[in-house]
Amino acid sequence: MNKSVAVVDDRPFFEKAVRFGLEHGILTRETMARIEADAPKGIVQIADHFGTAYLRTDLESAVTRMANLISLYLEDFSNGDLRAAAMSLRDNTLLSHSRGGSEMLKRLHAMPGETSLHARKVDAPGQKIFVNERSFAFPLSVASYRAQVAQCQANQMRIDFARWLARQLNTRPEECEDYSAEEVIRSAMLLLYVGAKTPGMPSKREFVQLIEALRKKSFKPKPATVDAFLREAPTAFAEMTRQAMQDFIDDALPRLKSLEKSPDEILHAEAQGAFFVRDQPEEDVVAYDRLVAKEWVRITKGDADDPSVLATIFLSVATGHPPKAAALLKEAKSIIATFRKQGFDSKAVLAFIDEHAPFEQREDLKLMWSQDLQPDAEIHLADNDPQMPDSHMDRALKYFRQNCVANWKGGSR
Image (cartoon, rainbow, N blue to C red; front, side, top):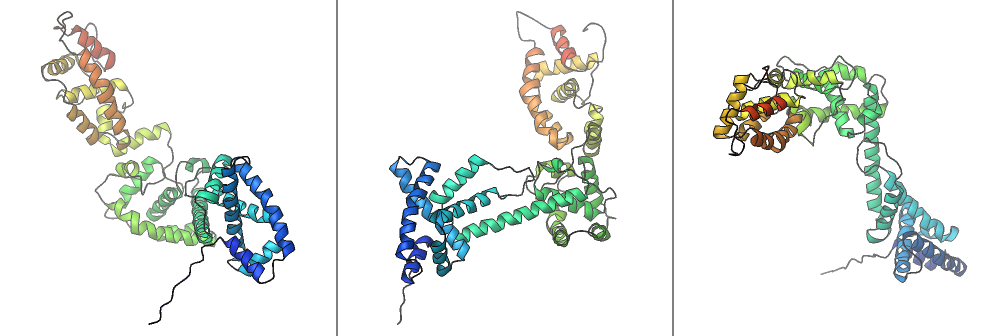
């Protein structure tokens, strides 16, 4: 039985190139003398850059760094051809090869590692940390380096595509800075799939209207919209648009058409598969609330940003009364009397918020109730201090008037 043992040569590529050059007469004694003279200069420079040349440990790590940087540059430049690598060592200085590896890592660091659309600037401290790690503790093989470069290039293409879509849909770059390319692309595909008449990225209100249009039984997609949109598009972006549309149909569309979640929940509850929406002016906020939370707007009378309105509603719900944005004197007394008899039903308030409030506001409203209004009202509406009795509710009604919407005039009683 013929057995063979595979030999793995895990020497640095730099060392392999030197050995090959010596064995094949490419590197002469004179060349090696020049390399040996160059090496200490490079080692000291590298040690000073990442630490100090006065520490032995920094000098020793600099030797490893230099070999790793040269190996990375040589193997990439020569594409693994030892002859070409040896000839490069013969014709160029050792320091130029080390700098070449360092520049490769700096270029990689400057490339987008993800697809967020924020403006990117050179981060000198971050770049130094990256080169520090990738030249010593976690050196990159050429295969890994090329794979990361390819991924970063794909990210950049995705970013360029998303920005192109945004421009075509009348959206300024600064509007997209807090979003990812995927979120912008997804919203653009939704707009094109529905065939929206408005050639612009949707606001929150328009997003909800697009989802509602999708969910109608009579809805039919409008492929002509995509064709018209791509009439003068660059070839690469036209291909990416058609692929993005297919991805949207396969992945996002079933989720959007499902009645399991409201459009409001889709917009605000999902970290993955999220969408870009334009910031809307103040008047559009109320329109959005009317669209996604009609009952909430009706109960708050459109004044959901008024703490006194919310306090009146929450205290009403917490004591089993109908939710109202304002209270008559007899209603305020009933709220106080009920609280003094049985306390607040906090779960009822939280359930009310979950059922009626816009999704984006729910957590803040729950905190307002549980951490602010409830503990404060429990102190001021109570009558459990024998030194300061409030059996006629004068003190409690004064608190109610100061913190809620009281629909009565004159004194408390």
